[in-house]
Image 1 (tube, rainbow, N blue to C red):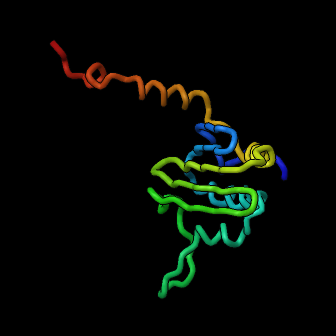
Image 2: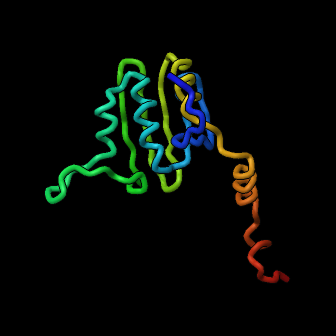
Image 3: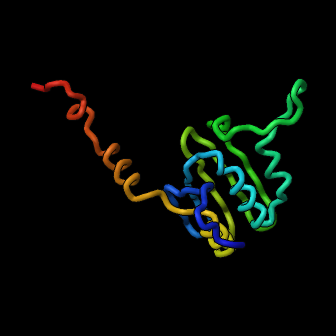
Length: 142
C-alpha cells in the first residue's frame, strides 16, 4: 500500500463510526472508480468482481464501461471474511459504509487513497445550510 501524492478518487467530505460500523462520504467523480477498485482489492476483495460493477453488456456493442454519473440512487453490497461494505451512489456523493472488527488496516488503506475536502468548500456548504431563504430571496418583507 503506498500513499497517492495527489489522490483524485476519494475526496472525503465526512466520516462517522461507532467502532464496528464506519461511514465515509466522498465526492462522486470519474476517478472514484479506479481508486475504489484498488481500495477494495487491498481489503482482500476480488479485483475482477469489483471492476465488473462498473461494466455492462449490450447485445449491439458488447461490453462497455459505465460512467460514474450513471450510478445514482443505487447501492452495491460486498462481503468477505473481514469486511462488509455498502456503497451508495447519490447525485453528488458516494457513501461507503464499512463494517469490520479490524478497523486499523482499513483506515490505513483509506488514508493512503484519500484527502479531505478543502476548508473553503466546507465553509460554503455551512453557509448554504444556515441561509434563511426569506432573507436571501431579494423580496421585500414587511
